Image 1 (tube, rainbow, N blue to C red):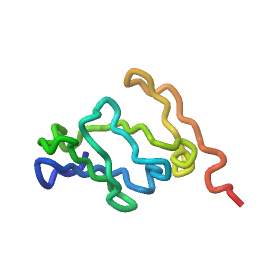
Image 2 (spheres, rainbow, N blue to C red):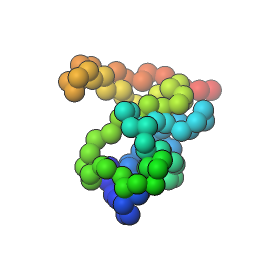
Image 3 (cartoon, rainbow, N blue to C red):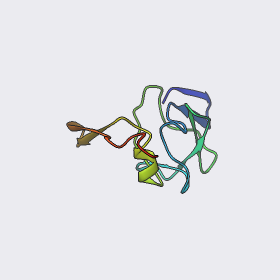
Length: 100
C-alpha cells in the first residue's frame, strides 16, 4: 500500500496496467471486508465494505486474486512464483505482446 488519504480509503500501486478488470474486480486475498476499485492505469483504490477504517499500513505488501487470469498474465513480463513467502521460480511470459 502506498497511501491512505483518509481512514476509509487506501491507494495501491496496482492499477489497470497490473490487474485486469474485464471479468470483475480483483479481490484482496484473505480480506473480504475490503473492495478494490480501479484508480487509473497505475493505481487502485481500496475501501472497506462496511465504511470502517482500512486496517492496512503504508508499505504493506498485498496479494490480489484477479477476476480473469488470462488477461492479467498478459500485462506482465515475468511472474514470480512463491510459496509460504519463499520465491521458488521466476517465469517469463513468453507470449506477452504476441497477439496479432
